[in-house]
Image (cartoon, rainbow, N blue to C red; front, side, top):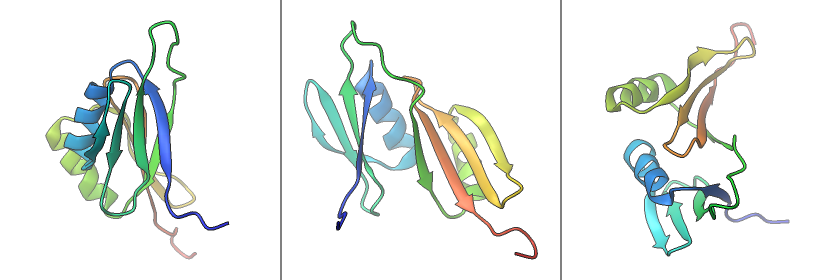
Length: 122
C-alpha cells in the first residue's frame, strides 16, 4: 500500500466557524466549499480536513480529536495564546518525552498539537 495523502472528515454543526478557526490559528486554507462541506488543506503535507455539515437530526460524534505533530510547540503555544485561541488542555510535557496541548474550535472539535522530545538520558 502506498498512501499518498490523508484527509479527516469531521461532522460539525457550523463548518464556517471551524473553517475560520483552523484558518486563523493553524494556517489551513480553503480548497473547496459547498453547501455540505468545507475542504481545508495546507501546503506542508498535513492531513486535509473535511468539515461536513451535520444535519440537525444527526448530532456530531464528538469528542473528535485531530492530532498534528509539530516542531517548536513552545513557540506555537505562545503564538496561539497571543491570538486568543481557545485551549482545552495546557501545554505540558509527559514523562515519556512528548509535549502536547489541545485547542477547541467553536464546534467542540479538539485539535491536539504534539512534539516528541526524547527524555534526558534516552
